[in-house]
Each structure stands twice: as C-alpha cells, then as structure tokens.
Image (cartoon, rainbow, N blue to C red; front, side, top):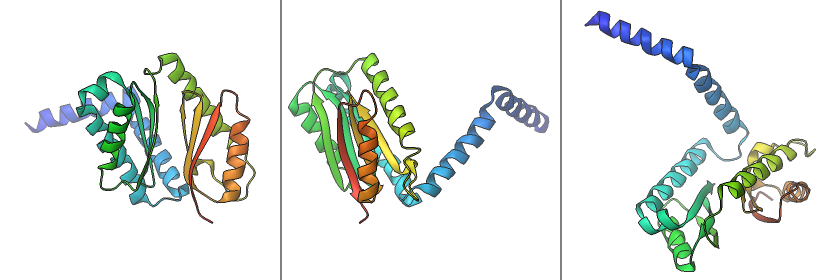
Length: 195
C-alpha cells in the first residue's frame, strides 16, 4: 500500500512539473500577493468581492430565463456591484438587479445592463481589447504614488466602467487618459473618493 502511494504521488508531481502547472500556480500566487499589497481594499474585502461575484453569478445561473436570454457580467469592488451586459427586456434587467441586491454583503448595485440582444463574440473580444488598452495606458500616468492596479476596468459594448478607491486628482487623470484610448465610446465613473 505504501509503495502504491509513493508511486502515485511521484507520478502526480511529475505530471504537474511536466505540464507546467506548478510554475503557473506559484507565479499566480505571487501575482495575487503583489496585487493585494497595492490594493487600497483590505485582503478580507478583496476576498469578499470575489465571493459576492460568485454568489450572484450562481444565483443568476439558477434563473433559466436569465441564463438563456441574457449576457450578464458581475463585478464587485469594495462591495459595490456593477451589473453590465445585455438583457432583452427591462423586466429581465430589473430581475438581475433584484437578485444582486439580495446579497447581504452588497452595499450598492449599479445596474448598467443594456436592453438589447446578447453581444456577439466579436464585440466581447473588442471589449477585452479596449480593457487591455485602458489598463496599459494607466501604467505611465505620472501621478506620485498612483498604482494602476488600484483601478478596475470593465468594458461593455464600447462603454468603459471605472471602479476603484481613488483621490479626485487620480480620477481626473484616469478619465482623461481613458478618453484617449481608441474604441472607448463612453466612460462611466463608479469611483469611491478618498478625499
């Protein structure tokens, strides 16, 4: 019995090393640690934000009409929830908002769901590219003590939502920089101000 455990353990560890999973886990852990260090939220709040997103997504998944007819993104930052995406009717959008508001840890819900058919894969890819460009553009912002990882960027159909705990001076610079990014059609500030 001991030999089989040893063999199985060796095979498992070998497969992890050969597949490259171990370095990814280690690098991912280091990246997550670095992110937590620079975030203005507490570690507990960061974990709770992830939990809020998962709970709401799970609840939305239980609603067959929402699952089948809508494309919904759930983002939580400091217990403030952004709902973005598309729903075919106002009643369905409202139902998504009600589900999000039921979570006891949520402080506020911004329901930015558009009344439209779910976006195409091409539109979603374009939005991902816009998000990447916005995040990249914030790297050299030039404000003393500013860390771009403190800003959550969500793009949906050309609209860029900006979340984070920032100072007014930072927010103004972030918005001005975001306006310069090609593909950005509209900016929605959902910041919490520290001053």
